[in-house]
Amino acid sequence: QVQLVESGGGLVQPGGSLRLSCAASGFTLDRAAIAWFRQAPGKEREGISCVTSIDGTTHYADSVKGRFTISRDNAKNTVYLQMNSLKPEDTAVYYCAVAHTSFYCSVSWFHEYEYWGQGTQVTVSS
Image (cartoon, rainbow, N blue to C red; front, side, top):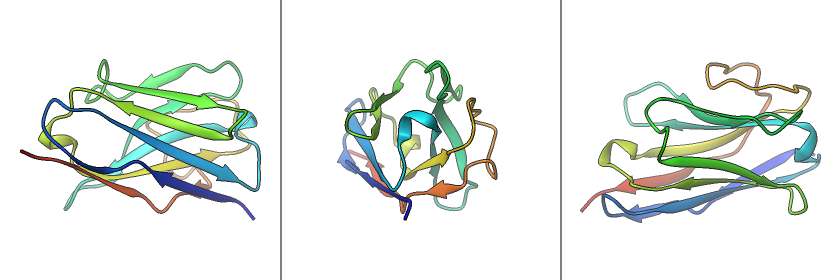
């Protein structure tokens, strides 16, 4: 059974940092393309970062480029999203998603990601 579990969300002040984790079970992450999405209240879910399985290339949405970093620890079967210089507009529920048969990834994809976690809330507020 494939399962993704996010953790690490919480309340942080503007300018602060958080690291989200996405732990996978039921398959090995090193053979899958992985993405992070977020959804703010009243807005559509948006892809913000992804990492390919073939060569570890990373991609970022313009809204988070230079502030967020995606990484993977294949030994722990876990993907991380390090979020720095957080802004109030980063407030959202964050999801990880997996395209387990894809070598590549894109933050513009949505239906290509077959498995999703339940999400973790990130709130940036003073």
